[in-house]
Image (cartoon, rainbow, N blue to C red):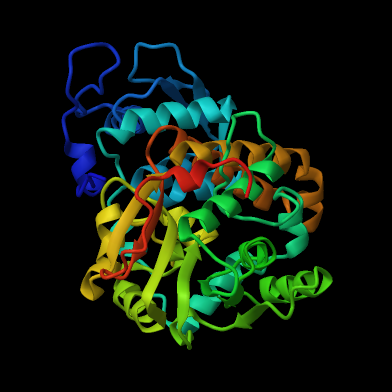
Length: 427
């Protein structure tokens, strides 16, 4: 993202460009406080590359920079909300929306779509306070536990409301657009197993296993033995109970520990949705772990949300939703493997599959908002609605990507010549 370095004083002294009626007019003496605030609102829209939205001030005045009909209106409930948004939009938009000091009149999805499309090709305005107050969190072993606890340990009952029956909290794989979420998540588990080319009796290690669905699927349907590591206490308890109920406790071991402490050697390494919590400073550590635990003929798969180029995580999401989170570019992901001469075999981008997954999650979440409100409060409902809806539109507009990388030891020639094994009928 292109970051605007100016502070509030600089903004108030800057001259707006353009000659049409919607362009920010030059600020001048005698404009008055309301005139300055209207100018600031126009200037913010200009920085966002003039999406077809309007800002409604607390006194009912509307501000716009686009000639198009607005798809939605952003309503500022008080003067302070405008100043907070201007100074730090990367963080404050989510804060103000969650608290109700900023509301959206019209379709939230249309608003997000217009905003993402307007900024995706041009970068966006983050505000002069963003880098000062929202520095990335490190993911030390202690801090990683705190970060995971804030997101995953808020309650299994909450996630049951909108995930599939197997509690898979990662991108599904849709063989057809009308597939159910349950079918698509099972298809994703099978897709991962086929990419790893698992055979009965092999040893697999999983880094970051969520509620254990992939580990149990690998053992039950492909006959492998799995050690799965996770630092979420609630997820580990859930996974152990489900494995015991399914009669898989002798084939799947769920270990409540950090990926850094993986021991033993394995035929395959897999990580689905964990890399986002590692952070680029610890990518060398993850690479050493993979190299240490793979056999001479080992192979692996890493599945992660990503971006087209390196960018810092949205400050609000990194604070309120995924503390310590970072979504890498593909070039950053390959740096995990390069020091150990691990050969990248295939890269697949499942971006549109994640957009479809989020459509299902958001619809289920909306059907459950009364229960969510009883569990938490209205602020929590608005916060998670924005997170799920924003994520959906980020994938739909290409702002975010979903990468699956498969890799192997360089001397491993036991490799398929085509991708036919991924798409054969049946198992």
